[in-house]
Length: 265
Image (cartoon, rainbow, N blue to C red; front, side):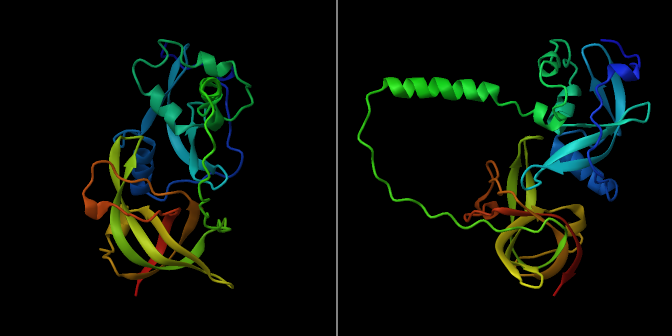
């Protein structure tokens, strides 16, 4: 693998589709790096191909998915051009062994117009496994169908896309397992969450990261709050090997991103 800067035509740029989000400050930048499993001690990261490697800067991120719960990292090359890449793929590039087994080659066989976020989420292998499971199940003798009572699912809320105003109470603090850094992250769980608008929307429970910004408010269970933020449908995952006080028994289906203008009542 060479360390020379590649010619621009050698790089398959995937420029941001829309205006991407930038970092509010250094603390927000490090918080996102931790979320993506990247080192918070670095400013530059390696972009690697089986032909070359080049240092890049992280300029911001885009959100995607039906509920905007996923991120695509926006990186800047030495020639000033921007490109998007899945954070897990960028994390792999930081490994010394990346490229030695031509990890990128299988991805280049896909449609070159496919976004980087989708390249890291290929499901062909899962489809093959699913077919194998189906064949095995067909070979087994069929059993009489057991009629189980259907569970009634809670109606999905139509969440606003833009930033909105909230009122809520602090229910408790909890831990959620982060597969990117293989650690538990501390979160704040809210109850009685209401989106303040012309027709107020009752959300119930929601959660958000217990960031350094929030820790300055020294929140405690029972605190009544008002704040702005964006809400998405993202279920709170339980922590791994954590004490009982950091576990939430009820399902928490919604996450509040980047709460700001927080006021304690």
